[in-house]
Length: 390
Image (cartoon, rainbow, N blue to C red; front, side):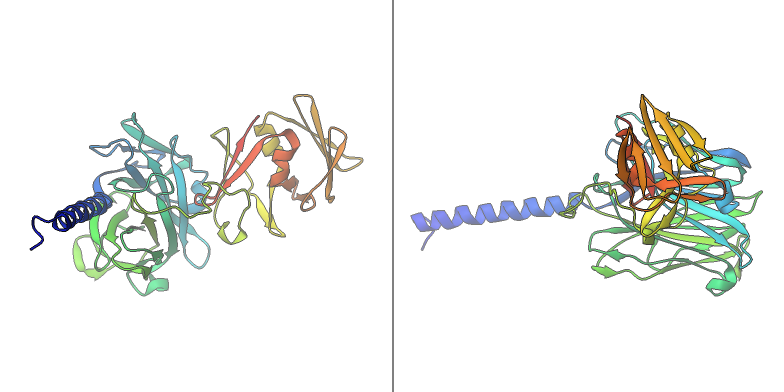
């Protein structure tokens, strides 16, 4: 018998410690479960803004996910988000002729200690729009979004009334959140195995959206998720119209960060630069009337719009075909079709030549920071450029 011996006492202590460790591990795992706690939805009835109420019970550290669905697709841009929100993805749907009729943008935000009662998104023009905000607990605060994907189309492109959200690579314990929109007054049937969270309709203007989610129980490719659209008052009659399907992957609070995670990237990836690029100077949105573009793996931006946003004066020397920027006593000379620029008398080599496209002068993005000593960052998840002045 070991019950009263020193060895028996040691084994008892070890057994107690092992049980305590097991209970602690189990508790941590349970606490890390991601859960949709509440949500709110609204529509705007053809306005330049869409306002959605803060979900009930919001606590500091909760994740907010916003679905903004609107008519006119890219023609409704730029879409300006409330302060503190980060765009995840924008997807537009259109018929073969290129007529863009519906767009959908997703955003995320980690709730602070004092959140406003309402959040407002602003469009470039009056549009019909509707949307929803989900509140999640148990999500990793740093880098909560583990992946995203989107697809837009018309009924005939997907096989009658299917609305497709492309799959993602996921890990056990992650949560898939699907967002579906269709330009029709409809009932949207949730994909198999996913839980319906909310469905919102604009009865007057024939738009319907749906949000669903599902816990990931096996690491690997999730596969596409397919929702089905039916007549609102006749579930047996399918509907074919412009649609958008998007998927977002949430990481639990105990999921490790990648070893090389730095939050922002300062190198643009051409493969990820689809859709509009948002520009912020000291966290304020800069509205561009023309978009940046990629050449030789580098992003070129419209010089005048960026320099003026940075408080610089811009001039043009027609004789030498040189653009000139001036700020705080510094002068930048940028000859067209050249890989060299002059900053306060010193020659600087550019990664790619400056270009004139239409009537606009384009310069490499990285040079913006070098010209006036500002910091330029690229956020891949929202395809946004951030410039911080020094």
